[in-house]
Image (tube, rainbow, N blue to C red; front, top):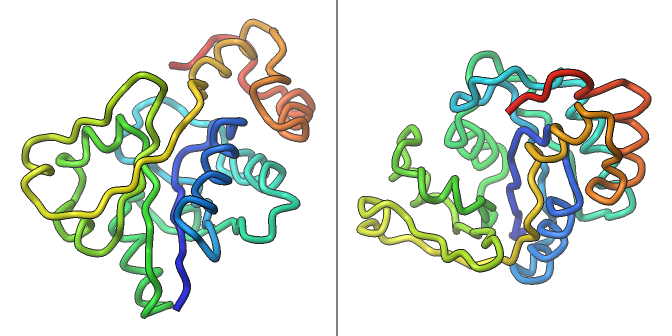
Length: 197
């Protein structure tokens, strides 16, 4: 039986806080493996995302050198909106008997009650919640009522939104993303022009 962390997101772009959180999760949760799962078509995101191949490439660059980090393309390959429960069901069906940890940000935890079949999801995984500095995660009362396991993880206060805004203005993002990702953003002219929220 393996202990596997699931870390999904748009990763638009992946940044140093994502990597730091993933490394923290490896130790705090005693994980054998952490799966990075770039979202295909996130059902809650209205804005235009960078192309899937760019987001996948940036994650690949960010996780190089850590053998316990694994890129999982299941949501990029799936047609239609990306629902976390579909991903968890698919992975658990392929690899039964493992212990699964779902890493979420505080905002995702607060909105978990809006997710498709969230009660079933809570029964399938242990939640690991990334706490931004000075903020305590508060689930919706409906989520609080349902028994579930939760592990707090610290998170640096860096956002992809702020990084896209800096890049759109032509400002450097070298300190906010892994060096290889900064080069990739520059070489592919990502996020230039009008900032996307």
